[in-house]
Image (cartoon, rainbow, N blue to C red; front, side, top):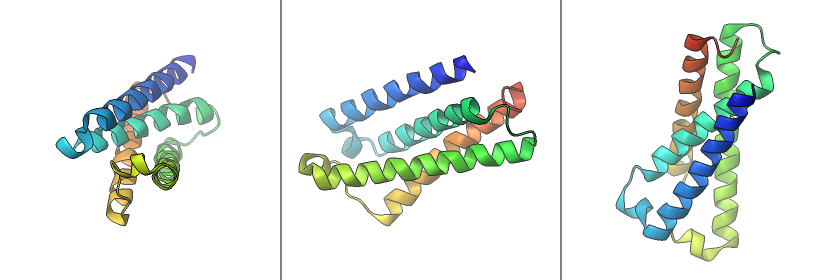
Length: 129
């Protein structure tokens, strides 16, 4: 369990560094896939957090897989709220982020993909249920 928390924290640092560098060097506009990669990594991070939270409490493998996905969707939703608040409160941030429904939904979907990857990994490695 401690290893999953370590992985989640390490991924959080990668995301923070990636977002900082992407904003600083204009990667969001230069490389369209920068945001995609960060959201997939965030989904993986939320998946590992869920492994720590619910590892021993959910006995059904299917329910466990579903809850990982739902938790990453919720995490992506919170991430999008954070981005929106950042764009409203900090106009410099808004230069790198233009909120739209399509962008928000695709970001959440990419994060969900990260959760699916963790769910598949947990099932195949018996790391989850």
